[in-house]
Image 1 (cartoon, rainbow, N blue to C red):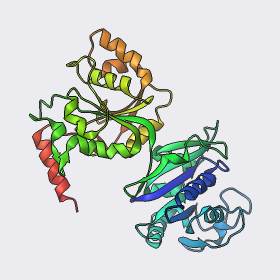
Image 2 (spheres, rainbow, N blue to C red; image 1 turned 60 degrees about the vertical axis):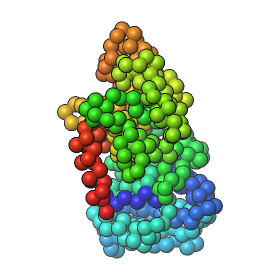
Image 3 (cartoon, one colour; image 1 turned 90 degrees about the vertical axis):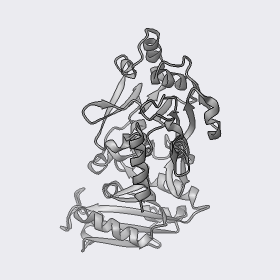
Image 4 (cartoon, rainbow, N blue to C red; image 1 turned 30 degrees about the vertical axis):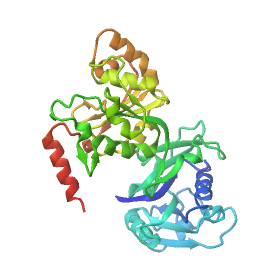
Length: 377
């Protein structure tokens, strides 16, 4: 998988859903201050000259005579997707046509052609199988739940499913931003960093452990802040975290565990959707958080499940709708977060890559993490 954080990739659930309109709107907005390359990728099943949609087709499939081909749009027919990108302000537009079996090779050649520092907006479903862009969204028609095969294959990798009526979208263009030379979406959500634990196994306050010259809690905060409307810290010593210059929310009733911390922070949050992250998880997978947010509609919480059915309630998404269930559990004297799951509508998400939840419980964990960080090139 090729990581390309300066690529924003847009897929489509079907035809005529507004994918190119979205790409052009983003290019139009960002080309005022940046040089943006437009990319369109077309995957072809095999060199047999037949159109997968039936009939004579448009000639794209039959005209490919090698494993892949990259061409540059100059002044194509009006209304053509690539021409529209040029009209929107793209500095150049490239079209990759590629056999499905040689997609990785075609992607590598494309990236070599545009260079490592190029800022680009790419239309493709299939290319997501070999490239991890800064952001990947799939556009679907309003009121439709149909996904064509190429979109269904990468649906689980989408940071957002964007609904469109062909002209407008349920995601504001202003939500797309460039942060540290990478595309991101600023989520209308609150990130809650849990920093009120006793750190009993660590023996020292883990939130203040040094990571590259700054406290661990700031290391976590810095990874979250660019991607959310709001960040708050759940902690019972507000003065300790004033340097972060964000709201510090103490427990309504201290000494009752993380459930009370989450409950108190949710009450203080400005958003319905909230991401709860423990301050001792040093590497934050924002892409996984986006997946969880994308699956949160209609649920009180989205809880990752790793390993042998192990819940990860301190790296999870909570809707404010769960407050009633939390209040009821707390009132009857229960303290386990899992007690809430029994009386709430919860979406459990199986996660194979458990490194997303690696946390620092002991000094050995911390020293091992620092050693691995120092070994990075």
